[in-house]
Amino acid sequence: METINDISPAILIVGNPVDGMSHIGPFADAEEANEYGDGLDEDWWVVTLAAPEIEDAEETVLTFQTRLTSEDIPDDFEVRPLQPGDEARDKVTCLSCGLSWDNAVATGITPTPAARCPFEPFHRGE
Image: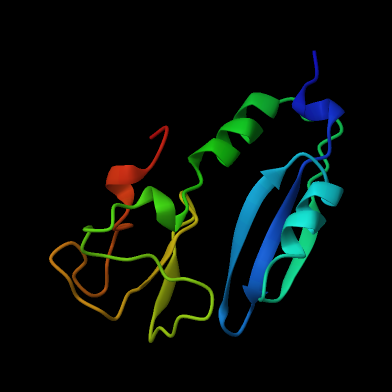
């Protein structure tokens, strides 16, 4: 049986530090991630995740499973995740789910400044 220690998964980083970045993946390997990136109009690069001797491999896999994408948030949810290139006066990124939002915009869910991630209701494994 293949384990996390036997493979080198890869993620695709999309965007740039100025406009904002997000990630897509994980992919099985760098080749698969590169093939996906070739179809994008934005800046992107591939990062290979090496985990040769991780004792807590189950926790590492759980971390991948807790990440969210904007598709995980219902369209009618009051706060929308920022996409690469979106302008924000006060961009904040949740370290748990990986989504970002404009912390300068007050909503019924996020007063400013927000003390918690507005996407917490959708967090996995918490």
